[in-house]
Length: 390
Image 1: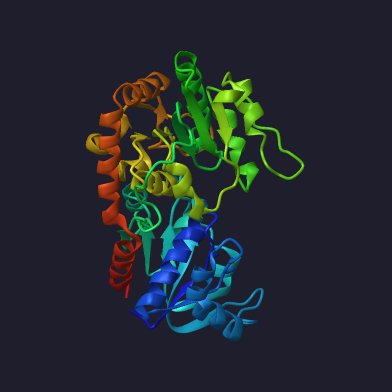
Image 2: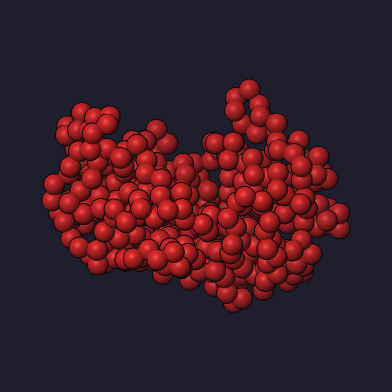
């Protein structure tokens, strides 16, 4: 491994890529080699003081050495280094990735659409190797003839996300959690269709959601939904009026809670009081960090059996939505996606409601499983994969 590891995306605890980068940098600083070089922003305003202190070596290096390191229209070279490039749909390079390269360059990729264009394949060919965030992503890459593909799942902070004592915040209620930014592929429309029916016979049920989206325009493909033809109204502050949207789909206001935007570190305190979590997602390029964190907290989860979820699903550690119809979204390349069945989701919710002990047992099995995906373990695997590209 080269002594320097460049990271081209932002470090934060507010979104998936940021959390990946945050834990990667923290682990590298703890190991002292290779040294992380952060080319993206290091966002500290929602981090606690202890984490900010741990990040100081990376922050100081960035401030002292990277001002003016690269310029628009030019590519700067970080010597004696491997640079990691964040990639997604289209295999497009970010502005940062276009401006910097190392002696070795590797892609870290999470994507949802199953077609890779000629241009996308050419961009991947510039790399020494590609790390895919799920087995499904790796299989798609290999099917398009992409060489040097390794599979490494993202990790979970098991010191933060772990089973902890309930506080009965929803005493007398059956609390169902649904998380993930509002998006067609996340399946919130399926959640509303199923919960509406479940709530009709279970007035003690409450749907607790973390659906707010920093980038609301990404929800536009919801137009392909068989369950809704609308999107939530946007308030003047940029947030979505999810309460109104849920009511328009038949979910009573008293049975719907919008958590708003929550820092990642606060989620365990929220999740500990959930009775069930449901993830009927149509597609996950990675392994669904929100689902992984929920499982790590010992909350029984319902997971759709498709794409990145396939690395998580097993009957002994959750409920699985086996019925997965083809998703037809016109021009979108959705091979491998799955349309979960509302009846099956309602049946899973009924099973968890009727047999709480069995649900808790499944949740504990999930928590035990997720311990093997702790960030130190996953960073070990990442480093091994990157060595294979050298």
